[in-house]
Image (tube, rainbow, N blue to C red; front, side, top):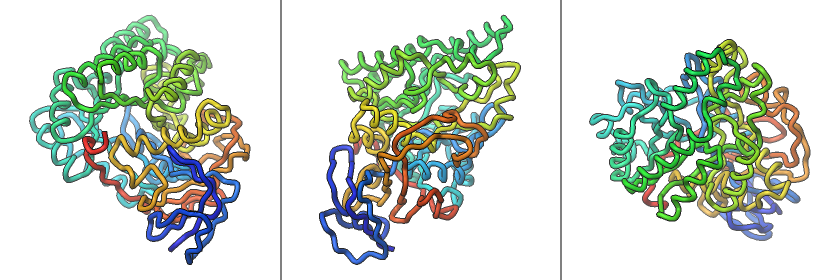
Length: 460
C-alpha cells in the first residue's frame, strides 16, 4: 500500500518545513512540495505536526521481577506505545545467574515474536559475567544485532555485578563494538538503609525514597563514568534522576568521557512529595525514586545543554494488587511505573507547549538520539527518503486529560490521573501502515518486527 501525507508541518531534530511525504513499501519514498504521486490513500495533514515515531529505549515488558511479572506484555505494551506515538521500543533481556545470554534471549524471543504490534529491539542485561559470558558478547553483537549490554550496580544477589566484572565486560564490549549501559546506584549503601529502616519499623513507601538518597546515585554515576574513562568503552546511564548524578557527568565532559545520559518523563514532572500519600505512594515506587523540584530544574536544563540526550520511560507497570505485595513493607513493593503511552504527549504538553524545549529538541530526545545512540539511525528516528515510514501526526492545539479510563496500558491506575495536556497524537504510521487512527489500533498482533542494530562504533 502506498500513502501520501499532504501539507503537514514536518519536524525532525534539525528541520521545520511544510511538505508532502510519499510512502511506498514501508519506506519514505519522496518528500517535497505539491507531490502528485499516485497513492492508494491520501492523508491531509494540514495544521498538524508531522514527526518521526518515537523510540523508547527503556521498557520492561512481561518482565519477571520481585516475585511477579510486569503487567504489560509485548502485545499490550507496544499497542499502548503506538497509541502515544512511540513506534519502536527497546526491551531488556535479563540473563539469569548461572545461565547463558543465549538462553535468556531465547526466553524473551518466545514472549515477543509473533505478539509485538510495534517494532522492538533488545538490550542484554548481564547479571553473571564470566568467561562463558564473555565469549557470547561477539555473537550477540554480530549475529543477533544486540549491541548494548545493561549492568546493575544494585540488586545484589539477583542482578548486580561487581566492579571487577564491570570492567571486564566493558573491555570485551568495547572490543566487539558495543556499549555498556548501567543502572547507576550504590547497591550496598541502599541495602544498608533499607535494612536500617525496616529494623526501625519504618515501612511506608516514603522509606523507599529515603533509602535511596541522591548520594547513592551521584556516587555510582561518577564511578561508572570513571570506569568508562579507563576502559574507553562507550557508556550510557539509564533513568538519571538528580542534580548530583548529572553534575558527575558534567564534570566528566572535561575529560572527554564517552557517557550518554537518559532521563525519564516521570523525573521531569513528578516529585517525592507523592510518597507522603501513605500507601497510595506505592504507585510511584520505582528505582531510582522520584526526587525534588531542584532536580527537575536540573534535568530540564540538562536537556537543553545537551548533557541529557534521551527522555525514555523505564515503563515497568504493575497492577494495584501486585503493588499491594508491599502493603506492610516498602521493600516488597514491585518497583515500576506505567508511562509507555504518555511519554510523547507529556513531553510535548509540559515541554514544548510551555516553552521549556523546542520542537526540534523534542524530536531529538524522543526519537533521533535514541535511534542514533543504539544503532538504528537513519532507519528509525527521522523522516528522510529511505527511512522507515514511522510517522506520527500531532494536533498541537487539542486538549485532553490522561486517565486510567482512556489509556491502553494493562494497568488499573494512572500515574497521571486527570493530568491536563495540550497536544494530542491523532494518527500514527508504522512502516507505512496506519497503526493508530480515531483512537483505535489497526495493526494485528505480531506486526512488530525485531530490529537488528549496528555496532556502536559506527554511530559515535
